[in-house]
Image 1 (cartoon, rainbow, N blue to C red):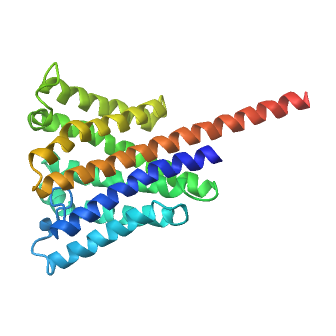
Image 2: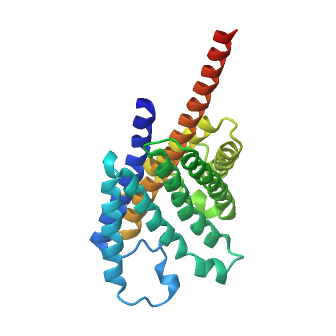
Length: 272
């Protein structure tokens, strides 16, 4: 029980830190993270700046709540709701231009944060009822679908993805654009099938950390006054937390199943 709690809190902490980062960025710029939260797709929204500040305060509050065990479940629920709203901002584009995969990719990227929030909410529950397990399993399934989209997005915009790879990393930008897309697809298959799911979800988390360290963090030094750079770092941190939470839950679930199997085997041995 102690290990489960520690792992759950670790993933939810990072997930919450992503919310804190989004909240702070929103408060500083007084606007939504347009690339990931395209409220402009809804048209001219009245009182947009005021809404952006409310959105930012809610992100900040949810992220802070996720840092304390007593309020963590409420915090991740709040963050999940905010990410769900962000995903809804993509729907006018998805409906309007369904043949452009970038609109689906944006919608599913935000949806992955919602799915991970479902897993975190269940994982932080004080009990381990069948209902909480079902919620986590549904979240895991939808998260896996979203990770499929991560990989497809790489191949749908291969040139643009390659440009984001630092030029100094051998053997070259096109190689890593393809390789990371393949890694995403393999991780998705593992998460959905359960085959090597713990390893795959851990490696997926590490890869997203690598994106932050090699792509987004250096951009802060190159363009420290750009809103999109700070927002991108915040979103990447949230994505790290999402992958981390899912990896923690899969690992914990496997341990629970193994413990039950060991207990059954021990009881069978005793009775015989």
